[in-house]
Structure formats: structure tokens, C-alpha cells
Image 1 (cartoon, rainbow, N blue to C red):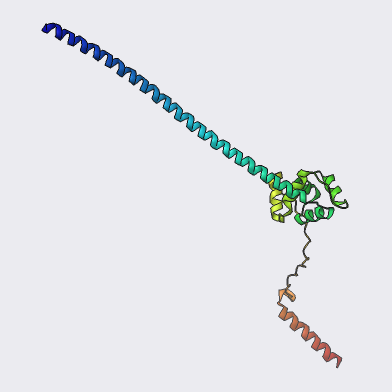
Image 2: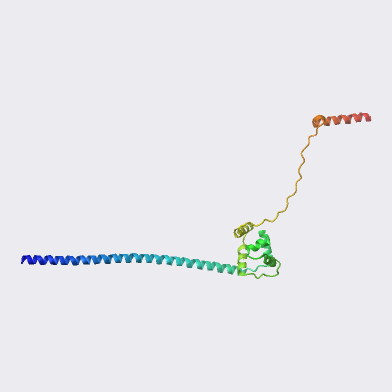
Amino acid sequence: MGSIEKTLKDEIRKIAKREVTQEIRKLRSDNTKFRKALVAMKKEMAACAKASKAAAKAATSTVTASSVESEENAASAKIRPTAKTIRTLRKKFGFSQGEFAKMLDASVPSIVKWENATGKLSLRAGTLAKFAAIMGLGKREAHQMYQEMTGSSAKKAPGKPGPKTKAKPEAVKKTGKRGRPAKDAVKTSAQKVVKKAKRGR
């Protein structure tokens, strides 16, 4: 009887150990799967957060750009330049009609036509926007903007010539005979005058 009980206990222990081992392996496998799923989920969350930030940034920039564009359009819509305004601004910058045409992205005949027109001018929206952008510039800023747009500097208008200065002739030393200094020449002339005066007496 003792041997039978011992054999039964050993068998039961082996069976229990086998089942426990199987359960542990199953738990470990499930744990590994859960960890991998958690890592994948974290990556997806990070990607979603990054995408949402990018979308928010793009939306903000779009709204800002549209608001700026609408403000520029509103400002240009209020401007109604005249021939005098075009001509005065061009002369203020010191531009030729060709250079001013490049600033407004227009043609030279258009500039000539605008400067000789009467009343308010009806310009395109793009031309009005560019005109509004350069109205508040100074001469130096306008020339810098022209250089950035065309890659070359505007030709400077010829200035008024300065007063002509006559060159002073160099002083020439008077010399008498055989290279004598001026003092001896003066003395000789004085002696001649004295002699003539005596003769006249």
C-alpha cells in the first residue's frame, strides 16, 4: 500500500507541475503580446499628437495669411491713386518710368498712360496692393526693394554739375639777366627811371 500511495503522489505531482508550467508559458506569451500592443498603441498616440499639432499649426498659418491678405485687400481697396499721385511717388523715389513699372509689375506704356490720365485711376487689385505696399517707403527703402526684386540697382539721376573753379596759375619768379633774382631786376629798373628823370631836367 505504501508504494502505491507514493506512486500516486508522484504522478499527481508531475501532472500538477506540467499543468502549472503550461499555464505559466501561456501567461508569459500573453504578457509579451500585451506589451507589444501597448508599444504600438503608444506609437500611434504619438503619431496622432504630432499630426494634430501640424494640422493646428497649418490651420493657424492659413488663418493668419488669409487675414493679412484680407487686410491688404481692404487697404488697397481704399486707395484710389491719381495721375499726380503716380507721378509724384515716382519722382520721390527717383525712378524712371521703366524702373517704376517693374516695381508695380506693370508695363512702361501703362505708367505713361496713368501719369497722363485725368481723375482717379482704376487699377487691378494686384497693382493696387503693390502700390499700397510702396506708398509708405522712403527713397532708400524703395531702391533696396527694387534691388531685391530685379537683382540690380536703379540708375541714379544725373546730378547738377558743381561750380567750375579756375585753377590758379602758379607764381612765376621774375628773374633778371643770367638768372638774377627779381630783386636785382627791380633795382635795375629803378636805376633806369632815375637816369631818364635826370635827362629830362
